[in-house]
Amino acid sequence: MYTQAIDVGPVDATASRSTTPQDDEFLKRIARDEKIEPQDPMPEAYRKTLIRQISQHAHSEVVGMLPEGGWITRAPSLKRKEILLAKVQDEGGHGLYLYSAAETLGVSRAELIDALHSGKAKYSSIFNYETATWADIGTIGWLVDGAAIMNQVPLCRCSYGPYARAMIRICKEESFHQRQGFDIVRTLCQGTPEQKAMAQESINRWWWPTLMMFGPHDADSPHTGQATAWGIKRITNDDLRQKFVDVTVPQAEFLGLTLPDPDLKWNAARGHYDIGRINWDEFRRVVNGDGPCNAERMHDRVKAFDDGAWVRDAAAAHAAKAAARYATSPDTRIAA
Ligand code: BYC
Image (cartoon, rainbow, N blue to C red; front, top):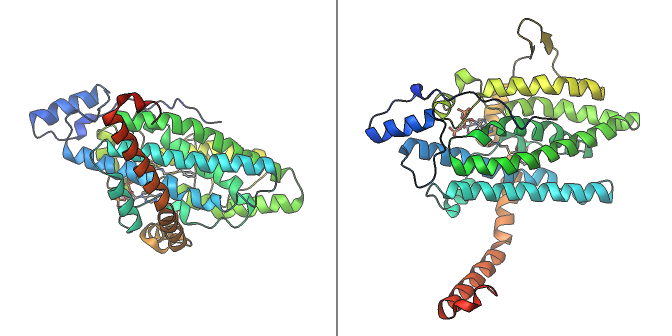
């Protein structure tokens, strides 16, 4: 449904100022679209920007397991339960690849998780909304994963090698997630009038928060200019949001659903859909901790982390024992 091959165009590294010969060489590599690897020299600000974005992304994947996880036991059939279980596990896996990618920049996982739990680090605003009905699971797959793919496919071309490579597998899995969500919504739309109404009510609640996932308008985005010049972001927030709207409107029409925006209309001159005004006050409230489910999500995440302490302790003890065995007798390596 979504291409894995969005054309991202060349990087315009001229927007970056180089202050040292080393920075100069770095910017030339960015302009040549070379991948920057962990051992390569890089400006400190580039490293920090990547840690910020990759760790926020990792946190979003892990917190994103919570709104859907609560529906695993309530999915309407064994098949739907199996699919949802696999999807939620995939999100956990995405978090792990992304934490690993962030660690290559010299930050520890413990520091990153601490920043999430203390409220210092952000995660996507979208996961602070309630999953009140089964239709919300379909809507998350169709709209939220759909928006995520639109944002993440260009990240497969990001200038930092470990992030770009992690995104390739993540995007393939997200495509499956998007299709399973669309399939749930389509099934509801072809069901009873009550089921279709449930789907419509869900879309009404999720449409605007989904558009907020792409971040503030380009003019109000403090990071887009530099991140684009460094080849981290390859397409801006507004351009990605527009691409998402343009592919999603026909899908909603196909399903017989309406999108809750009276100003949504095709603009033939632009060759795109126009949309109404996004409620940025709501966005800021949710990002700053005052959304419908922020407190609940953070409580559940910290509890899950604390409840899992014994698993981490056991894994660390096992690894230490295996390393000690291997140090005295390298033949034990395979058994370890
Ligand atoms: N929510 O200058 P900007 C998933 C923050 S997981 C919260 O545009 P940037 C899934 C932004 O961090 C989806 N905060 O920043 C998982 C910055 O704050 P700081 C997650 C937001 O970084 C499970 C400030 O606003 N995807 O799909 O250039 C189940 C200024 O913004 C948001 C990713 O993380 C937001 N929506 O661009 C299902 C993708 N938007 O750090 C699905 C990777 C903005 O200055 N990340 N902010 O305090 C990105 O592409 C970019 O980081 C963003 C923001 C487009 C999100």
